[in-house]
Length: 82
Image 1 (spheres, one colour):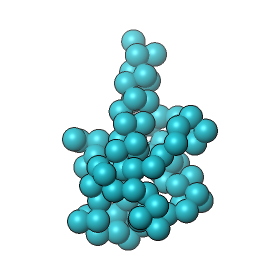
Image 2: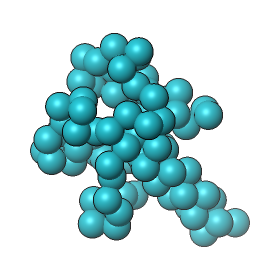
Image 3: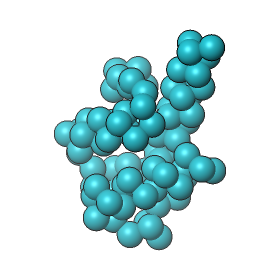
């Protein structure tokens, strides 16, 4: 849930959204985000979590998808640093 809280904070700061609008089941489309917004947000996530992401790697539909992607990438990166 820590990842979700951090992502929720980033969404609210970057897109001027209210926290109440965001749950794990919230669709990104319902937030009014276009593809350019998502690309910019991926850069924000890379910087925040110190990871590398590729928009081609996954289809992000819901906030849960973003959380899962971050958790997966953070875990994978930890595995390569051991």
